[in-house]
Length: 56
Image (cartoon, rainbow, N blue to C red; front, side, top):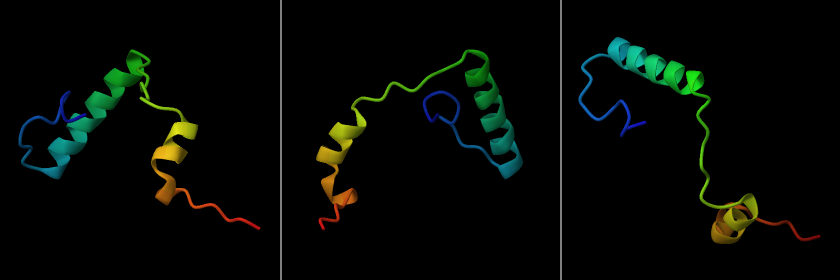
């Protein structure tokens, strides 16, 4: 989002809301997707401390 629409100073919250709304509408129109760089299982391994296990 920063690279696509928020790469400059925005002076008011109303202008920010307008910019984000326009960005979101554009992303919705093109059916944009997220390209995750790793799977959920990889995340659990890499971020183990954030995914605690509760052994019985």
